[in-house]
Image (cartoon, rainbow, N blue to C red; front, side, top):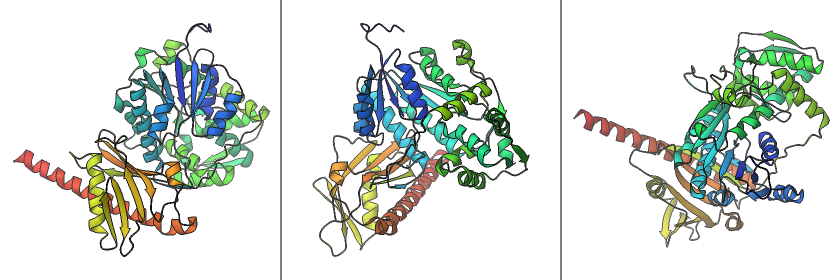
Length: 481
């Protein structure tokens, strides 16, 4: 790739540019590309711009907001997707991280199609071929792949095992355990095979995928030259660190207890440890690694990559990834979508179902494109939602939260919203609340309105599931008839 400043460089965007892979990738891309870093944090953008990096632009893009990510991908030719949602994105987060991941990927893929992006390059996880059922983390990675492929933009998925780097949450568990526990009892999941790969090699392989049409539509397994168990990685890392470490295997595998125990010992967030432990209940070994053969990136050994990561950890100033607590709510529920129905149908049906099932206490009225949720005996609505015609389609319905007794006035500024979105080729509909700021004090909101919303969504989800089952029974009867 030419680096002459007179030659127009291709424009590449990174979603997840502030993550440990994203930062390393950004530095590497700046040699040959114009880079756009997508960030939810406006302050980080200003700091990065002030540093004066050539051919680097930061754009604010909360991936839960489709308009923001559409703006973030404007003018982009190639886009990297290095995102997961295991850490909370609001002061109160209701819903599974797997469902959050699907919404983020769906927004990104929709925006990429609209922006005319030529290729999405996704960093996912190895998928065991012999597993009957994947753990939540690996299944989520696979669903993200499927979701990104749903909107016509060619997708290249790079599937890795444990990435060895100074700020890798998966790798950092190992030195923390070694420092805290010179003697460890090791459950059977720690004997599962895994395929560690150096951060430097992951970055080079990601760059090698840009514009390589042979990898369009492909899922590529990558890994380092060593296949090791977690026990073996611990012993090797202990040797590098000059620490004595004894391991005593036991024939038990209780991932939930193991993840809680690791969190208590290391202080690493349980939201990060739990999926790591869950993934290690499978053997995660990369199969044929033809991209590495073709690019001649065989990779660093575990010893080499661990030495680099540990040395970097010692010499660099530790930067805490502090999560700023903000006063909003995000709630996501995945519901079964009956065959032949759409998100638009679900939005209308939900209003009818609420009015029928919560009467006489709650009723919903539609007034000039606005939904008023009314409590019996009170004239002013509890919530007011305004339909967004310009942002809605048959497969995606959007309402903005524009008022009501239970909504803070700042919802209008923060764009609080309710959406109904089809995902995974119409199998499910996501019903999601984003950026909602309650008027009630937080302790009271958690005990009342938050619990009431979950109860309502559980009941409505059960109603849709029964409707889908009845539809399937009728379909089978027609086929037999």
